[in-house]
Amino acid sequence: MVELTLLCVAANAEAVSDALIDELGALSASVEDADAGTDAEHALFGEPGMEPPGSWDRSVVKALFLRTDDAARATDELRSALGAAVHLGSIAPVPDQDWVTLTQAQFSPTEITPGFWIVPSWHEPPPAATRVIRLDPGMAFGTGTHPTTRMCLRWLARRSEDAAARWRRVLDYGCGSGILAIGAARCGAAAIDAVDIDPLAVEATQVNARINRVSLQAGRPDAAQGHYDLVLANILATPLKLLAPVLCDHLDTHGELVLAGLLERQAGELAQVYAPWLDLAQSDSEDGWALLTGTRLPSRMASSSR
Image (cartoon, rainbow, N blue to C red):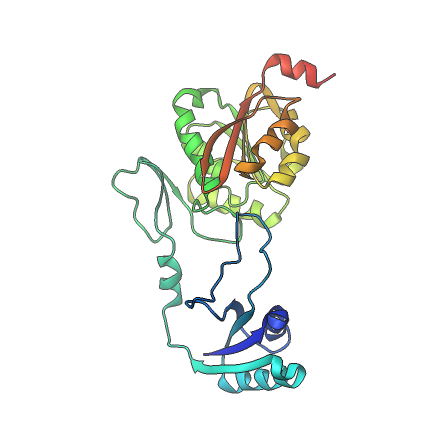
C-alpha cells in the first residue's frame, strides 16, 4: 500500500479528494492544512454543529492506493486536468500495521459513573464496574464516547436510584446503536421500546441487546405505541423541535422526558418549543452540549390537548 500526497490550492482540494475516490481508485482520501505546525496554521472549526468558517489557504490531499502505479497514474490525470493547481508531494509506501489492533486501541472502557461503564468486547470490565454495557463501534451512532450519550447515561444512572421502579415503559426515540435503551435496562427499567428511522440502527440495536442479554423491542418509529413513563431522545436540535408533539404525546402523566443532541446555546429555544407540554430544565452540560429534562404534569396534559 502507498500514500499519495498532493499540494492543492484551497478551491480545488475537495474536488481533488472526491475525484481520487470516485474516479481514480483511491482507497481513502483526506484533506489537511498544508501549513499545519507552522505560524500560518489556523483552525477551521468552532462550536460543535457549526459550519466551518472558510477553508485553508493551502491544502494537502492524502490518498491511499494499493499500488505505486495507480497513485502515479492518478497524479498524471489530475495534473492533466488541473495543471499547476496540483503539485505532487510524494508517493511513499505505508508500513504494514495491525489495523484491527490500532482501531481497538482507540476505544477503551468509558466511565459513566464510578460503577457504570461501557466496555468494548476486547476489554475486561474494570474491577469497580457494577453495571456494564458491552458495545463495540459499529454502523449506528452511540458508542458512549460522545458527551450527549454520556450525559443521558449519567442521568439514567443517577435518576434510577429514586425513579427506576416507576419506569414500567421506556421509549428510546432515535435509538442508533441502542445504547440508551440498554442503559435504561441496566438501570432497572421494565418494558423498553427502541425506534429509529434507519433500518441499520434497528438491526444494530437488536444485535447489541442480544449481546447484553437485554429484553427490548426495536423497530421503526411507528412501533412506538401508547404512553411511556420515560422517553429518551438523543438526536439533534432541529429534529427535536419537529418531534415535540410526537415525543410529548407519548409521555404518560408524570412521565419524564430526556432530550440530548443540542448545544447549550440552543437550550432556551428548545424549552420554548416544548413549553405547551412541560417545563424543560438543563440538567447537565459537557463540552458545550446540554441535557434537558422535564416531567409532564396532569395540568399540562389537559391544557395541551385542547
